[in-house]
Image (tube, rainbow, N blue to C red; front, top):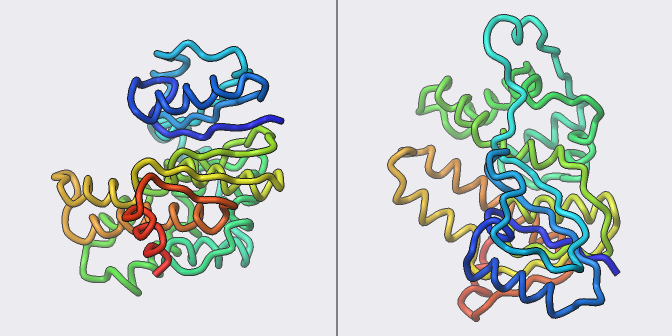
Length: 259
């Protein structure tokens, strides 16, 4: 049996409660093969582990939220290709941006297209039109250019996650929702595997508290970011076979999210 642990911003790069728990979990099952699918900020942290990996960890795959294919100057603009979405792809991306019920499998398949450029997609006419529709429906009281660039900033890391070629395993065990939950949900689609989510803290609540206190984001933009994290967590809850948490109040928060 092969188990893929999916973790964001913790094991094996950072010492802490969740990291220690993952390390102990892996060591408790020496006869099971584990692989790690880790989400980190950028390539500067590549391979910089603070834990000695147990012998039954056979592979580590890294996803970078701040990875970049953007080139400076006129050359990149000249070489930019116009990515056009099919009617179904456009409809589901619009649903996603509007926080409506979304057929995520269509989006999962979209981002596995060979040579799909995140830059070309975000700077292309279809994403611009989706942003315009969302703006007209919900956010017409703010400046459109600011709204458009906020959406690009929000979706850039998610789109990098969606481009990941998920390694095959029998079970995917996410230690949070968020971007880890998106990867786990993709694994269910592509590999027809089981998905377990063990939340130590409630991801959406933690991100919401951070955003409320944050100085770098103001007004309506706080809500846009909060809705993004809720969207990812809801996807993970819907795709998971089992979702666990540490205490009863956390369970109530998990159950409240779909509402």
